[in-house]
Image (cartoon, rainbow, N blue to C red; front, side):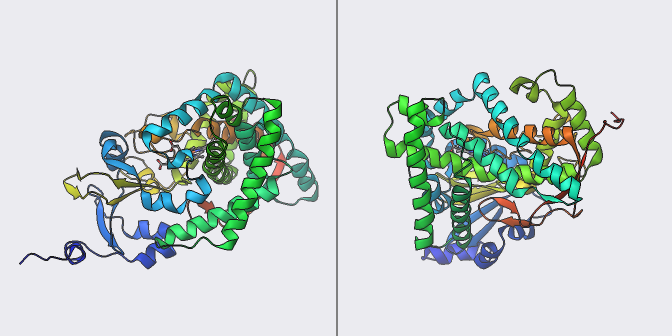
Length: 439
Ligand code: HEM
């Protein structure tokens, strides 16, 4: 006899996963459910929802590109980050409404705009040098996390508001970190999370700071996302949501990738020498020349491969689909495990090792490397993130030799994005000359 109750039917046909396990440690959950053969997605019920966990680049291509019209961003996840990304922020918009905002921001990333950012970031990195030089004199290690985080927030401020957030950085950083944590924790629960007083406080800080800075910045009319949106005649609240969405999406992700990349490069003497050599042979510091630094670009991508800050991409099927012979009912949650896809042994030799020049060669599959997502909603800030991270690392390697205090890879905390858990103390030494580098 056919079971009538949809929940009974659902439970009968599908293994049940532990919601608590996902809640406690999503990173471990993805690890533990990875099948030996990743050809098919893993189907599980968590709570009353149907989930498909995907571990294969072919799944990513299917969901993000080939069958993209059958998948939207996951409403479950969008709900959890609504406060942070703004209800009308780009992240929350459907594909059609997103187009205008995407075009406005893409126009700002022209060569002139990127060269302006290169000069800014160059200035921000140089401000850390006295701190490092002092530490060298004292033979002490420097925890780079707060310095790198500040550089990223200041750069985001320049792009979004044409404003150096130096004086607001501590306040905004605390508010963003707090909201990120709360959103991450509520995401992990997959259940309802009340809008707490703490969350309201952090959100209020972000809103009041953004409104105040935006008012000042508009007087100066320098190029930024803010002035571009204002020139298009967009509504004030819509603009504020975009500013918030870009800061939220661009700040934490870039900072975290830069921190992981710095650790990996600091632990690899040869990579540092090669980066320094490439930096010293650059004819002038421009965006175009930075993009041509093949080794540096590869080393950063390799860090993003091993430690993708957006460690999973959540989607929801808007209509029924079939993925590698597995039926995906309408309304299912389809989560792509970016970290596993990027460490897939069929697509990467020695997948868990840092091989700095790995990306000097072609990829075996175009969707085996998706730290910025893929398809029509691919990250709009990828070029900016690469600019920042590669420039900061080049400047550090050009001037110093680095060695991490703790040789073991940093421990990871997976909330909405993946972070290092602890500080990142690094010993520095002034670089005299570049040691002979094997090709
Ligand atoms: C290493 C740094 C970064 C990583 C790993 C990253 C990752 C991603 C990923 C994976 C997505 C797609 C999410 C999805 O498809 O569900 C995304 C979207 C987005 N990113 Fe980034 N991102 C980074 C830096 C930035 C920066 C610097 C900005 C801002 C300038 C930015 C702004 C955005 C925005 C606004 C979206 C939403 C795009 C849309 O929905 O159309 N990101 N990012």
